[in-house]
Image (cartoon, rainbow, N blue to C red):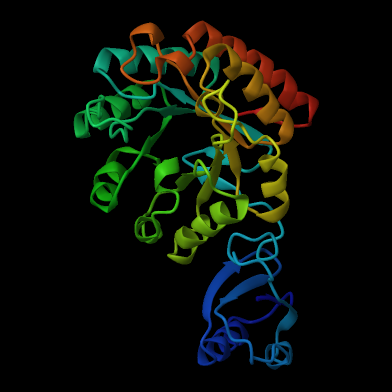
Length: 338
């Protein structure tokens, strides 16, 4: 349930409300606003009478949350969350574009791509140093060397860094180099790993699993949130359906649905969602039109010779064209590209 305090409620009164909730076995998550403090009481206690909380001094409203996800719910936080990542804001009026290669291959490649995406207007540089590949014989990434290339290129062109972390052992290392930790689709329901990310100091971008429902996806976000990390960005990256004409099926409808159900920012990855280079830009346009807070797109300076996902990676000139088109759409719906 959610407890909303009255305007002007004292800190002593808030502490007393928290004490009573703890006494009844609830874990309490606090969100302090300008006018009100919101307390999320987490726990299953069917016999508990919420009127005991309503009667406490300083309590304005008690709302029961019926969804299985609590902290991710719009009922817990009515206004959309906005996360400031070194001056780049996710969830506000601006649409953030994150771009770069699927995999970090060498220093020269990263600097070339960083230069081109920065000039076109991207704010975050993406690139995988650890690659979860379907085949054990495929390129697995450069590890920490790749992270160094990624960070150096981003710093030179004043970009933030997003990169994938695959398990608990990599969190501390990746946090040294990245501004945002990406969780891939295969790890969306790795609940032990998600609990560990709840203790991370950096924002987490959580990709939707290939066969996950929206509720399952939000429940995975709940694991990170309940661990203490309140900065979770959701990413629609396509789901697996019976369709074989594209790599995945991009669930554009998930964007407005999630916006209704959750306060968390949501971005879209049209590269993995469609898997075909000449279809990426139309899907990026559609995602922005549907209300996505950002776009995560693959760009390579030489896609035909990429070590990973070259067929879905844009050439730099195509990325520049994409930026021109999504700017027009963002402005048409009252937003702007960051």
